[in-house]
Length: 179
Length: 403
Image 1 (cartoon, rainbow over the protein chains, first blue to last red):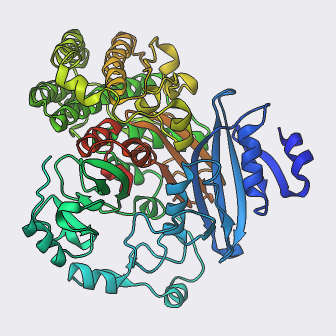
Image 2: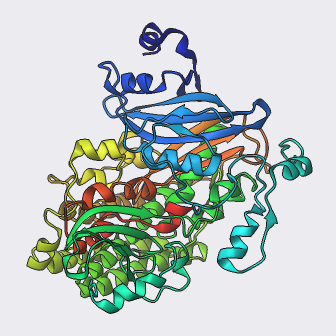
Image 3: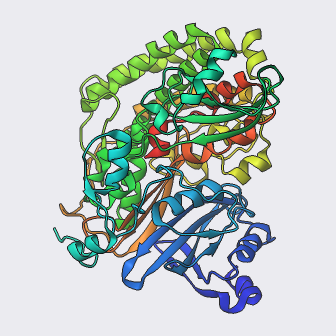
């Protein structure tokens, strides 16, 4: 499978590896739709089911990792496709390949601020439309919220205000508390 | 469901606030949001169904574009119950996160718990001991029945069959009593721990479960006498919310919704977890992919769950309840995806670990969220009343959708 991908897409395939028995392929973002279409339609292992699409924020590299989890009914096998993008860099939407991606990509946009190109309806999905900030980014502390929105719509004072710069200064780089 | 159509209502809507803030001062479950035509010549009107509507099963708003009684478009507005569960996963230790997950799908908390515990175990490279595996399987199957019973009761109530609701809750109560005796809670159970289960089975557990399983199949037949050949039920569900197998896979349906379209795919069989590989059970499927088929699939699933429970309850092996794990859990650096067959579909967890005591990223793949996406496709072209039936047949829990 990896050989076929490499033969077809060449440099687009960065590496393939397996961790605790789960296969993963890292690809570049430029031809993501073509790669996904190939994975869906190929004769060897058609990965015709998009299980999940999500993102992971890596602030140290200023990167987002978009994770696609695919499933093949024929082979009963899963595959993870990972794609790293820089901050503020748009990535092509895969809604044209799987309709599932519609809401999943909207959620990624909602939570991380990742812009998808050619998405039919890229709006916030879980948070209100006029909310500021993207909560699942690492610079967004879990206590923070859009104070103005809360005051305006709920009439209460709650939470801490979300300033990107201030939060960064306060928290420093993302550090995991040890024990 | 009744829509008032009069001058007064059209007057009212001038003052209707934006849909999201409508939740605070909503007096009518259904409000007119806009009409773009005169009163009696309205070609298309937009109606907001919910967010506080008895048949949306929580705070779900559906913006319907109607041409008379026919639905032209349906947009779901979700997020009213968003609590940031995934963010909390990054701020709580691996073990502390488990009770939070029970609050996602509060109807089937045992499944949420099992899925997460197994995912972390996979990352740690351990497996729970056989006794724990059997208890997990047993409890998850009982939970599947209680979840399906709640679905059956409310779905039938939405469509207008009140009796089923009362019967279904009678049996659900029996299961909740078993849960209460086992772990002290009825809904948010927090039954399992990473590495096994916390509690030993109580005295008289097997008798109580057997008493339930001996009577329950007859009760399922009882529900079926009320619904299966009921002409009103057939009229309201046959050919409603039809989705083909191809479209169902494209839109990402899983669970009974996918099996109703004829795809015999069940994670308990495809990727066995817990102790499912030890048991015999069938995977029921539908033919037409309509609401009636999904109803039949879920009814049969309850019988199959009883079959699994019957097989498991006599064979619970002796042994420890917990695998040997350190008190402070620190998984290796890496990521893992694992999913289980929750009552509503594929419940997956994608966890990224950076070697710390907390998850670097805790992603939940909620079945209801992905399944609800199919609503639009399923209701376009049908009647307004069918929207209620389709929301019911998708078996959604808003706590899980919004997280």
